[in-house]
Amino acid sequence: MAEEKKKLTTASGIPYVEHENSMTAGPRGPILLQDFILHEKMAHFNRERIPERVVHAKGTGAYGTFTVTHDITAYTKAKIFNKIGKQTRMMARFSTVGGEKGSADAERDPRGFALKFYTEDGNWDLVGNNTPVFFIKDPKKFSDFIHTQKRDPRTNCKSPTMMWDFWSLNPESLHQVMTLMSNRGTPRSYRHMHGFGSHTFSFLNAANERFYVKFHFITQQGIENFTDAEAVEMKGKDPDHAQRDLVEAIDRKDFPRWTLKIQVMPEAEAKTYRWNPFDLTKVWPHADYPLIEVGVMELNEIPRNYFADVEQAAFAPAHVVDGIGYSPDKMLQGRLLSYPDAHRYRLGVNYEQLPVNRCPFAVNNYERDGAMRLDGNQGSAPNYFPNSFDNIVPDPAYKAPGQELDGLFADWYDRNAPGEDDHYTQPGNLFRLLTPEEKRDAIHNIVGAMSGISGPKKDEIINRQLCHFFRADIQLGMSIASGLGVKVDMPAHAK
Ligand code: HEM
Image (spheres, rainbow, N blue to C red):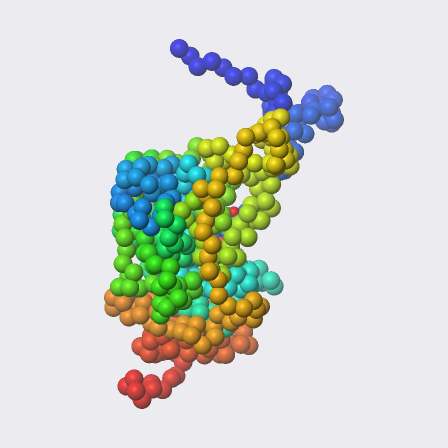
């Protein structure tokens, strides 16, 4: 049977016939003011762009399923993990960080790894990266840092001088800089990288015992990276290669999968562990906290409409569900505020009602009105609390136990104070773990990137950054210095 023909209509549903020719006085014009369809077309088009994400603007997304394979109920009562075999629908968005919406997927950059799990206790967002650490450990530095990854205010070009100036003045960035400058800074595709929650979160079990936890999503496709030369070539050949790769893999039913593993630290150990477990520039070595398997995430559905489901997706680290909590990590704390604020600006106050963000389970609250309220505004239900009419009650079962805090209030606590200022051991260990080929590539990439430093402060910035590399590993420092043509006398103890 032939498909029923649909009538062409205005946005208000009025059928009309002339879509291509404007209404004119005579065949040669001018155009009549009454052609409101022309106005509607042009006015809608003029408003098609919304602000791109201030970071992570270029990205791609897919829907999928999370399946529990191992029992972790000893650590958390989160319902998503409460039964082996349990499946939860989820959505993932992968991204680069610094580039604009049209920038190339193969840029040297961390990759965003943002997940939304539609659990029966509400949406849980885990908004991580493909790296377990980050460049800074205090949110007050974030906008300064990001400015160095964006465009120079005068030249409107990316500036290696700004980047290395900032990194060299913030030695806590070294761990992430080492990762970024290794070939992990240019993953071959979004399927071929791990994902990390990066921050320390907390778990609460049914007995309300608290554990600290880190989330690791281990790619089942295996890690595959571009060399710098391959990445540069790909940027020119296909700036959307990672977007295309994900769509094509899912279209051919080669569904990408990641194994979720966790590291768990009992609450009491956080006080005595040799690394501050809430410092986002440090990892917990696996020898201290081994990986525990939890389940599998599979991406198996490309959204039908990119704008509706990917551009309008809003992920917020603040959105944790019962059984999962925050930690004192200052970066996490800063992000709790930042994301919903960004969403209200980027998408509007009712962004939670957009289909991709909407909780598929009950939403009962007293928020009303506002731009683009799409859900009937909760009808005639009471809009205040407490009231004598509805039966919405806060459920005490969701109350989390108190958490002990220590220290005095102060606005000057310095995360780089003694005891917090070892910025070199872990980046040095990371370098020493690389294979000889990986070391060669990382050094090549660093030398290439630092060669872009220019201007009157060039030598000062290079020398300051070289000191950091030397402090992490002598061989690393010497190789970069020699690559840059900087003459350094090898310290006697290292000869
Ligand atoms: C996106 C702020 C640190 C991962 C964003 C956005 C903002 C932001 C405003 C855009 C949100 C939107 O418009 O939807 C911050 C601040 C940070 C911080 C203030 C530090 C204080 C981090 C860290 C990670 C991270 C440490 C990873 C471990 C992401 C990801 C996205 C994102 C993956 C993209 C989410 C998506 O796909 O929609 N960030 N960020 N950010 N951020 Fe951060």
